[in-house]
Amino acid sequence: MEKSGDAARQDGMVVGSEQHKALFCGLLLDTFDPYRPQVIAWPVLAPEARTRLVALPFWEVALETEESAATRMQALADATSDPLIRAALALNAFEERRHKEVLGHMIRFYGVELAGETRALPPLRPRWAFLRTGYGECFDSFFAFGLFALARRSGFFPPELVEVFEPVVQEEARHNLFFVNWVAYQRARHAWPQRIGFAAECLAALAVQIVKRLGAAKAADGDNFTRKGGEALGLDLDVRDFLALCVAENERRLSLYDARLLRPRAMPAAAGLALRFLRRR
Ligand SMILES: [Fe+2]
Ligand SMILES: [Fe+2]
Image (tube, rainbow, N blue to C red; front, side, top):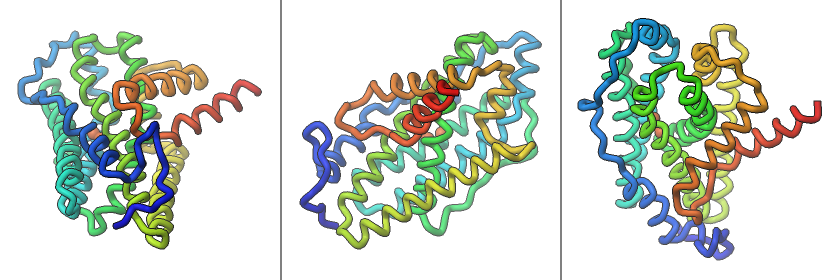
């Protein structure tokens, strides 16, 4: 599809250009971390720490989320004709599957008991499924960055265990950056009528993810990963401090990458608004 003449610029880079594509695909392909889940040296935990880890309520949800993300990203890779974007999407899918493998090894090593094996079916509409997963990841990892920093500080788990998950968390920052740039690139490459349709599809995917999470937050036994995570980690969270930490961690993690790439804006903006509101009360 043709790029429109009024394409937005980002520090001299034209959004939707070949240069933009090379940058956001290179972001994933050039910063790949070749760690292997099979050889992770899991630290032996003291009995209390192991009991705490085994009792955390989110391992099943985490496995399902990674499996679903991997399947959806691979489905979009298979449906993408551009070789560079296809390679980046396939790497994204590989990394999601590797996250699931890391969790699987951890679960077996420490003896976490789960109901059964998680499998996701390839989506019928790969682009729609990818948009939903992408917005979902932007939302969840924004809070996960803050929770991870808190877990590191609190000493709830030994530092060697926290460090095993550092590459996993950083990969989610890369995925978010790739996603928002993929969206902006696709939008810019569409001619006007299709561009409006694509923008509407993005908005709908975002709305579905927001509604899903609001529903989970309301439900007494909701499976919201972040909320349950905070409770289970025994963290006494001051909402303002936590939001400010999420904003700072999000910025720190994304600051490692090319400044010309677009940044995820919705979550930092929503958190900034919430912080202003909370301070006034
Ligand atoms: Fe993941
Ligand atoms: Fe991801």
